[in-house]
Image 1 (cartoon, rainbow, N blue to C red):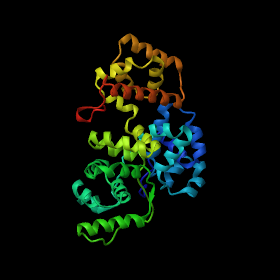
Image 2 (image 1 turned 90 degrees about the vertical axis):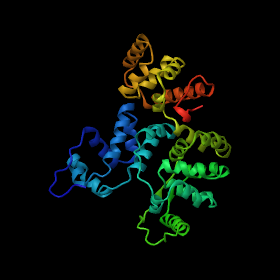
Image 3 (image 1 turned 135 degrees about the vertical axis):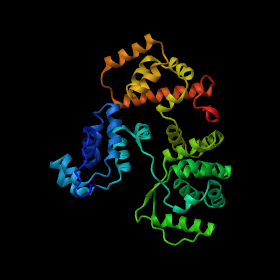
Image 4 (image 1 turned 180 degrees about the horizontal axis):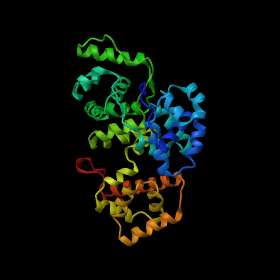
Length: 343
């Protein structure tokens, strides 16, 4: 919020567009996104998060003719996460939207249950050991993913797939449910349960991306054991988690040898379309694993094609990811590093 006497912030052109996107309806915003190229979608999506705290005075400075509409909607204190996800999904479809959101969604400050800050992973796992999987799911979803991963891998192996499945399907959690968990922890730790100091609004928890973060942070053996069982329980949820665990940017984590092997297994058309959706640094990293002549050919092809639909780019990137997975499964390449290699 702007402090009295302090001039409003000066927004960039992208941030000014983001303010408008946060004010218009989802259908209108989705229609705009469909007309942008991949780089513009990512930049605008990121900017929509950055302007979530814009004040009314700043809205007036950005678009005077939308002042009345801005005042009707807020002051402005809406949740950018739901707005951006809704617009992206309408514009691109669920699968492609997940791919974009995985890159631009900022890490959220979690832990609605303050007492969890004072417990280590083993203590939390001990509290949840005999509790219903739904309780474990809600509580773990409140944790930072790094801590949550450690808690998950210390729980009984038989319950891990069920807990992860429940985390992936979590939605709004009522304040009463959060308070019940707070009281449970207080009773198990002897800290007392007085005074929640929590919000009166529902808390949005979980989802496939959060479940994926938990698996990524756990030992590789947890993923190898849990994912097959998840596919038997709920193929759609398991597929969403699997796709959220690995996005195109993860390809850049491979060393030059493995990345070069992958590129040789991708046809030129797919590679050209996939690289239209990455920044210059990432593009140079991938093309640097090719011969100079081949890299120049890809660059020329990219320039000749001009603007390309985001859906085409994401489809090509998805093909590259699947090729990488297949090569990793048969041992041709290694993805990741150390004990956390993808196999």
